[in-house]
Image (cartoon, rainbow, N blue to C red; front, top):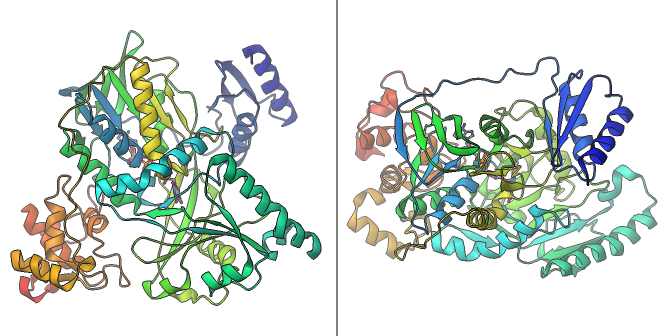
Length: 586
Ligand SMILES: Cc1cc2nc3c(=O)[nH]c(=O)nc-3n(C[C@H](O)[C@H](O)[C@H](O)COP(=O)(O)OP(=O)(O)OC[C@H]3O[C@@H](n4cnc5c(N)ncnc54)[C@H](O)[C@@H]3O)c2cc1C
């Protein structure tokens, strides 16, 4: 569509929404830039969404202000040269780490720069871990194509990386609740829910080449005895999978490191260097890294990084999702993922569900809410109630009090809602990998393939290394071993016999392994993500001081210097009685 025609459409939409006097629009190459002022954040989002929906719009850069809009922070960079590289990847989430591992197959100097103290500290640590098949995505979108392709790779990839992955299967269920907010007559709900919608889902599955089938209520109730008796119909998707999103990301990063990639943690990109229309590297708070290629995988901050390069083609507006986690004693309540379809559908939301994590906890959620603050990971009372209200209909007899934790993650949505994976229009060598909301985890392997393809087409010299090692050796996980295997490990290293986290059965040896792994765990949360110490029923009440003491000993630090996650997040001001206990009392 021509720029002029698109601008006419945008202007008409602004007029219809009553924004025409307060907001001005410019169009360039399908990207609409909005400037002006509106009355609230809510209106800012409505405006961006309305423009993003117009046909022919490739991106929406929403520079409109509103009362209370936070001023962009300008962090100071360090001038000294840190190093040179062929490629800099900004962001060590699942996407950045997957791209890094793919690039480590070639003769290239690759650096991943991450502002947090560990990988998987953004959205990649706070999601459902579902390896979606693509059935829930809008047909014809890039995210759907990459999800279908990514899902196909997961089994092999998880075997190579020695990360847990299970094809749990999913029942997509319709009950009278599915139509509760439409107030349709029961007979109509039965006809639509019982036949029409399952047929539509199956037609879509056929087009995508996904093995799905109709399941009658007898089958569903036999497979899921705790499910509501009110099932109208269900569709079974046997290949729906689940992994642990942060262990998957850590494994990708470790394998990339083993193949020569440098991961620079605690290093924030504060500027992108551009010379004569080509990217020349990044400036960080620790110094500059010169590189002819920069891959922007900065999640919620991808638009900020793109702005630094003068290559902004989208705006990120976060959507929060809250998730509840339940005690393992409730794990018998489901055997497959369960998803309850509800109508009318919330746009760009699969609806979440009830699922069993790879570690055996039930998980309900997520919700979906637009929020302004890109760092707000709170969970409100209303969100907890919303999760219960939404999913309790599936498992009416479920004991709510079994909840042991809740958390939220933020989806990095753009106003056009699809993934943005492409070379920048304005700056050569700068690649956008943005708008990676769900199913970004499932799609990550295919996203990285697409990035390699783009780099090749853009002229990067990609010579394969003959010594690339795709396999990663996972350290032992004592709770998963047989008695005989445990005895062998303990004979070799008695620390595997000292249990530090009783809820999750994590030994001292596993914590030591995490601290000395290829991507060493430097904080309590980094140890927790690698070993599960502190993730059980007591949520670290028993083991946290003990883990801290081991971490301090192994890193040769004072206990008071041990941090929870971010720099400065110290938990101890001095020695406590439990911290002074002898090592063998653990
Ligand atoms: C509630 C919820 C549930 C979800 N469930 C699923 C699911 O079941 N299955 C699925 O496939 N997907 C799911 N998703 C989506 C999935 O989690 C994301 O698509 C994926 O994690 C995105 O990864 P990423 O690497 O792009 O972003 P991130 O993990 O956010 O990584 C970006 C990184 O960039 C870093 N960064 C930012 N700015 C800078 C800077 N200036 N300098 C250096 N580093 C910087 C950040 O610190 C961060 O670590 C879910 C998302 C949410 C919110």
